[in-house]
Length: 573
Ligand code: SRM
Ligand code: SF4
Image 1: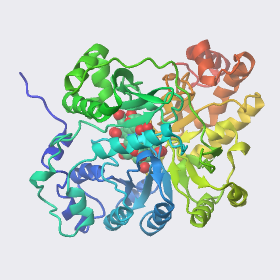
Image 2 (image 1 turned 180 degrees about the vertical axis):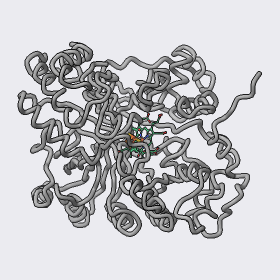
Image 3 (image 1 turned 90 degrees about the horizontal axis):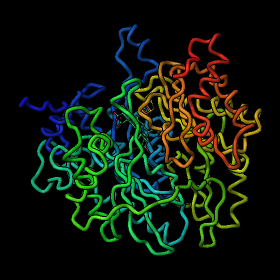
Image 4 (image 1 turned 90 degrees about the vertical axis):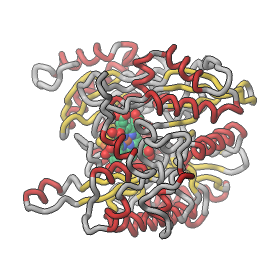
């Protein structure tokens, strides 16, 4: 039998002494960058090395080194932060990064443009706030998500409690993080015996692993796009237990059929006291069965899809220390809107504020960073970051609502009730200039794109319809474009593949209709589609459901017939 050739990263992990490698020495050397091995290990500590893509070509021509910089991602289970933490993170972003906080699609903050000599200071400063970046990235369980709404009822409290429980249980045990970044007397080259990773093992997982928790009434985290989606099943007020959905994931490569997005499948049900046993079984299943030879084929979704549902159930049952039960039927998922004002249930209010692409900065559109700073410094409220890159201010007294609204308006921040749904539900990933994978722009074209969609929807009288539009700079799917009503996915500079027919509730994948639409022609595709939607939609039917009913390919062919003679790109796929 030929020997299995593991991917390079497997050897790097194996030889790393529990994620230490040569990171300490390289952090201290004169280079503005690190080696390939340290690049891989740094991910586990929460950081990606990249470079400024806007300046790279010019600098190369001029014989200059790239502008190397590091991105840093915190862990922030359930998106929960205190005012004190928020205000301190603002200062850290100013001191060591590009003075912006970037809310991610997984409810945490990223910092961009950190130079190497500031990385250690940055991580240490975050750690002083009792926040870690360990496991922000890397082949471990990533930030654990749940619905961010801070309702003060038993169900939401339980959701939050469970999220923290799963997060704590899946944290890596390595002391490398403390040794490298926090304590000056830790061992930066050798792991000790008590650092053994009982859950992960020496080579951790084959790939990143994502866990999210939700209820059927509020799937605002797209729970079925997770490697492990955990859905709380209630009968009235009684928690019966948890459905475990396995094998969700969105990343793919354009025109490589072996890679694909996938919605997670219901595999098992576990009783309330067995949640962690269920999590353990799923993580171990992926640890032992995920493909360690090919990182493009290493996620749990490929294990589930290729071995089948029966195999997955049986294998889960073998790992699970308890009696196996089939998942309970769930009729439908819904998405609740947590933006705007809501009563918490304890006499206080929370306010959800839409942050364009999650980027908290003062810019020509609004001065949201100053507005949030002033409000949070004055009222010292708790904060929740949401899975759609927005922020929730909690625990607000009725009497303070007016002042808070006035501050936001004064800084040009549009409140939910004054905002179109196209704007409200728009997601854009980071993309250029920091993301090394971006094929086209996303965050930087989000605001003009929203305006285009608003104008089109208004033209056809569907501006009040909830439509989730999601744009990414490449098919890795970081803004979850394959589960929105409309997915716009970077293909080449200024060109996007288009997807329609997913549902607003995040339970159905959409379908590709065009491969390479120039940015300037996006409106030409959606103009006729919205016209037909406006005239033929059924009551309460979203655009994604409409597209699915008529057939994405039918709608695409109509656009092709309309534009095809004039435009080469207008060829339905
Ligand atoms: Fe992502 C890689 C940004 C959520 C799928 N993602 C990246 C990197 C690190 C680029 C890289 O590998 O060099 C991006 C950093 C860009 C930058 O400059 O900051 C990046 N991903 C993001 C964020 C910040 C997007 C955002 O605009 O908010 C999100 C951070 C989440 C977090 O806080 O942990 C983010 N990424 C997602 C999601 C959505 C989710 O998890 O709910 C997905 C799709 C779900 C999934 O995992 O399948 C996602 N990111 C990927 C992939 C594809 C993985 C795959 O299985 O093929 C990559 C590429 C990779 O891992 O090789 C990737
Ligand atoms: Fe980068 Fe692609 Fe993710 Fe966008 S979707 S942040 S371009 S990896």
